[in-house]
Amino acid sequence: MTKADIVEKVASGTGLTKLETEAIIEGFLNTVIQALKEGNGIEIRGFGSYKVKKKNERFARNPRTGEKVFVEEHYVPVFKFSKDFKAAVDRGLKEQKK
Image 1 (tube, rainbow, N blue to C red):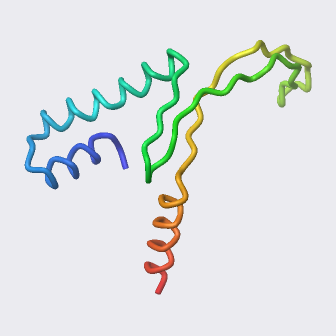
Image 2 (image 1 turned 90 degrees about the vertical axis):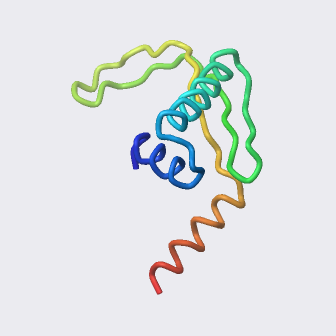
């Protein structure tokens, strides 16, 4: 599913135009990105939480050459699904298989 697909589904479910829906979804995504850039986490109950994790500097290997490569300290965004979200997906897929 692409962002365009999400916009279409939300627009049809809410009665908003695709243009309005796209602006809302863009706004949400930009808010999440900005919060993470500032080092803040976001928790959406029943859905999940976004956080930023610090990865320490280390040596890694280039898989093609086997050469050791230094990787600097960096930060990565992570998302953890809520228990409710995981349970809903599990139930949905199990029902589909019946």
